[in-house]
Image (cartoon, one colour):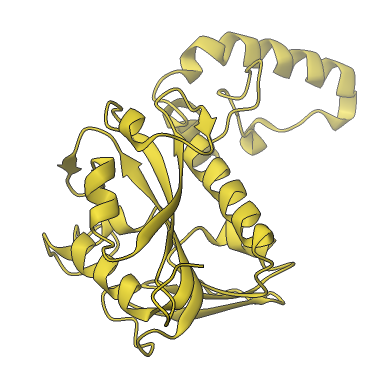
Length: 252
């Protein structure tokens, strides 16, 4: 356990950055042990966290802002029941305090929480009836489909098939919330894809883009945002709110 803790100190969050902070850690250890006296910690229990001396608390801009964006969009529409496919369960655990959420995942998490129900689901074959889900999300997921990263079958068309399945199950008048990496289009095998913003939206035809938000390469969040600005990025996060035409042909 101690060896693991020390290995993590030098590998996470960035390899070997911990070396620069090691002298400070040792000074703090000696000071704490001196002042604690008989209650001084054992070296065998040491757990150095050498990457946390920062002026500001770090966060993953993609995941923080996409969760905040989804919660606000659902609140604006007063959604009470929602279906999610594959998104962060940390985000959904909070969202489920006010919205009843069904979470479908290729690797369903084993958790129990009021308002949150988790079940197995394959994004390219959800098993739901066509046009049956009024409020649906899939955040930072579609870029992984078909790359084998999470045990799913290899399929170069995986992202397109997943998009088509999300379109299929969305009800007329419903909303689909999707986020994915945007910028210089490419496949970073087997981690993820990065989509040109226009191509990402086109995957969900005939749905209409009602709103586009963006986290840029510097971690800045813009809502609404111009999709054209995303095309110049290296690894941004595009957020699309999409609607399916109602039975009368109009959009809600």
